[in-house]
Image (cartoon, rainbow, N blue to C red; front, side, top):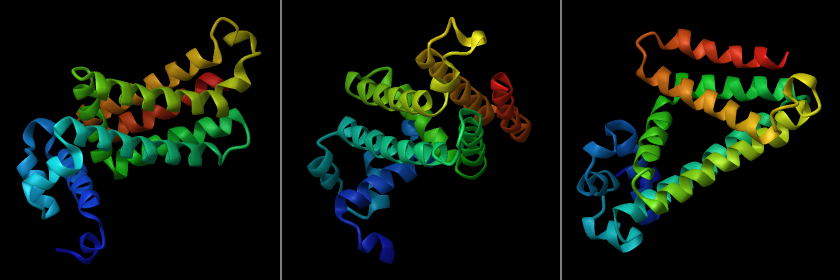
Length: 193
């Protein structure tokens, strides 16, 4: 066991192992045994800390939500105007797609699972609604008074932005020519010039 893992609690090791296993193999291809082995714990510890598979995945969504929200807000705070903030948000997505695509794979896998579980659906909706709120606060609220956006509320515009970012991200993950699609995210900025 690595020194890093030794300094974690068992529940933290399990969560880290679950994130790694699902991020690399996908939910459908990972068993609780795989996660326990990766965490270097006995299988019963997963049930002790998380009750069942859904409890473990709920905790993964909570962890990812905290991570995504803090990173998104950190990037939004870099800009001084809505346009600059949008630029930083797009650059964040582009960088994540280039350097940490497994986080997107994990997010998409968890989103798919959320379609079948009310508990996970509620958590996943919380993530998306929180990101929409950040986009509205930092970006789209500035465009509310402009003539070209008078028929669309800042919240709806924020949902469209998030949908564009995540929808294009899914396409990137499926594409053979990823870099062209990653660069295409920059075109979102053109809408607000």
